Image 1 (cartoon, rainbow, N blue to C red):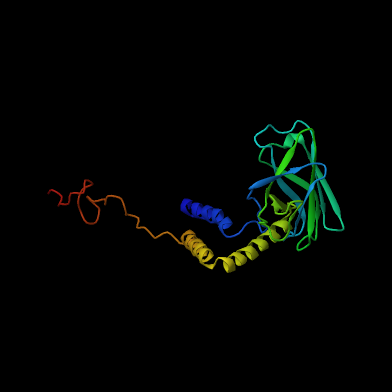
Image 2: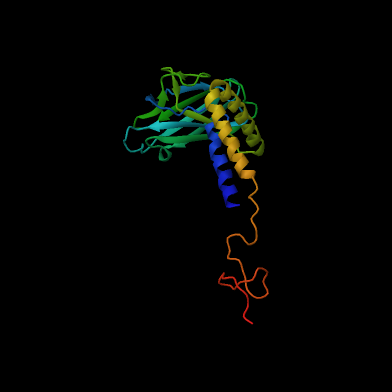
Amino acid sequence: MRRRLLVLLALAAAVPACATTGEPLHDRSVAAVIVDANGVTQTFIPRGNHFSVFEVRTATYGAPGPADGTLELVVSDGATVRRAAVGAGAIGDNTTVRFRFEPYPEAAGQQFSATVTWTGSTALALWTNPNDAYLDGWLEPGGGDLVFAIGHAGRLRGAVEAAGRVGDEALDNLRDEPVLTSGWLLGLGALGVVAVRRPRAVGLGAGRPRATGPGVAGGGDRDGEGGDDEA
């Protein structure tokens, strides 16, 4: 039972090797952009509905976090605007800042923009990737992309939809990297076989000294020495 549990945990840990939560990851930072009251804007296209979370990563270049100020987010799909803000206390160097707002029910496949502004007495930057790692959007001004992530409302329906997106992304990865992904799938299948395999039947007497002596078939005493009883 313990072995099966360990194998199942290994299977769960292996899932990210082939797919994420169904939304692209944009976490490779190689540069930073100063954010101020004028703001910077990232465009993107969610894969799932109920989009309600946007994350960025702040940079202070080793300096302490700001003592005051507000980091504000304005999200729009071209028709509906959502706003969220966090205070200076939640901001530091290499800190992931999460904005939460009312979900967009029908977000999948729609073009969105997220504008981040900063008002505070000290300068603040956001990590970016100027190499345009994300192909469904871009950063303005400057080009490239923010280091960002998007999320969805914590509902059962959202979890089911995320599972479907994971499957879709796994298929995309299989097409893009057939050798690597095929090897991963074979390994995952082998772990699954080990998890469901029944243990081999073991005899009741295996691994224990055979009892012998008076009244026991085969004769012999409990010390394992055979022989006849004395008359």
